[in-house]
Amino acid sequence: MEFRPRLSRREYDLIKQHRSAGNVGIIGDTHEPFCVAGYRNFCYDLFDHYGCSTIIHIGDEVDNHALSYHENAEGSLDALREAELAQAAMDKWYATFDRVKVCVGNHSALPFRKATTHGIPKRFLKSYEQIWKAPKGWTWDMQYEIDGVLYEHGTGSSGINGARNRAIANRQSTTIGHLHSAGGVSYMASRNDIIFGLNVGCGFDVSSYAASYGKHFPRKPTIGAGVVLSGGKVGFFIPMDLGSKIYRK
Image (cartoon, rainbow, N blue to C red; front, side):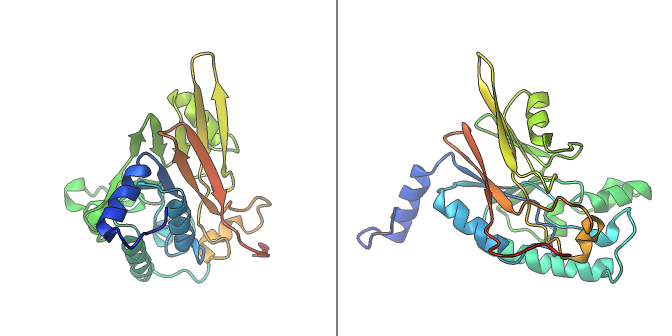
């Protein structure tokens, strides 16, 4: 639906929102500040195309590489500088999407996991919203349920059938991220219902030092995002067009 001058912008926005109610756009793992160039604009254009009225970030919005329990890659930034760059990247996401529901991912939770390791009580810690100076419309939680579809990061799942197995375990349609190289959707039907497991891929830049652990892995990240349409009945993974790019690093 194109904007018509005889409508005010507010009227146009209200009509568009009403017509697209129920469609959900899902941002994949961004691992800021190590996100693929152009991924944010890709998500905006995709969700605008499908008229998504609800936006979910599937988790690992930031990488927290410097806080990892694994060895840091050579040339890694210190935790403060990495956080500053991640904040600058998150500010751009805030400017693009004013309301987003973020699923807590395993990388998201690294500050809290480190605090637990060192015996720091929760009373001394900030919330996710405070850590990343989020605007009012951005919220963090472990999972969300919309129109019968469960959205969660997917921590604990593995393999190419991770989303499918998660849906079976949850006994309902389930959307996850976490498994970078397994973007796609799988439907399962019984004589009673049909459900799907959707992996929305990610926006993680494989050429960044934070991704160096997978340098020699044959399977690379599936760069893309997800949409769930028709009141939770249909799910899609949409890959981002990377042109002639070939992963060499």
